[in-house]
Image (cartoon, rainbow, N blue to C red):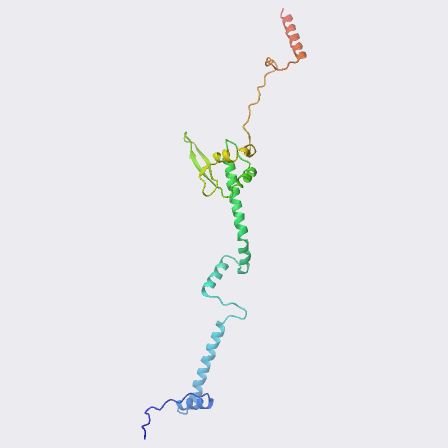
Amino acid sequence: MADEPINPPTPAPTNDPAQSFKRLLEKKDNDAMALASQLFDENYQLRDKNRKLSEGLPKEGSTVLSAEDAKLFKAYQDHGVDPKDLKKIIDRVPELESSNKELAQMETLRELSDVGLDGSKLKISVLKDQIAKYPDAAIRFETRKDKDGAESKVALIKESKDAAEVPFNEFAAEKLADYLPALKVTATPTAPPPRGNAGDPTPHGAPTDPEADDRVKAGMARATHNAF
């Protein structure tokens, strides 16, 4: 007769509730009250665990965010940005960039107009039209001293990215010569002709008034007669 194993194999678990209950009761030495107390405690713990898990679940219709997405969402809220408006904001970015660029260009043109050419300020409308012909032009300003030590603002321009930077007055003389009369706000003033007094001699070559000459001569004759 073959030797029986010292430790018999554990029987395979069964899905029969009655058999499971019987095994549990045997472990409690057939003490039904002790088994009932254990099952009650385990049931309570399971129900409490399920309740806490249910409370941690997102509400119906809500979206679960990762930790990184949650940080982004909070950043939007801190800046007063509604995530629903993000697409509208993103769609407006090109428009805002174009507007900011145009405002910066106009500010540069105003400063360039104030620097002027040959002592004259420049008309912004004409200046804008002419500079627009050079879309890659870059304009900047710096303060320089002349030979006497006086400081003045100078405008410098690069016609294109690869072009050399030159003073704006040189650029204008070369590129904008035909438009300088329209570009300058004021032309070089001309001295008015001298105005003489009524008794001054008539300038040579000026037209004369015969009647006025006769009146002058008559007055001089009366003055001579009265003197004697």
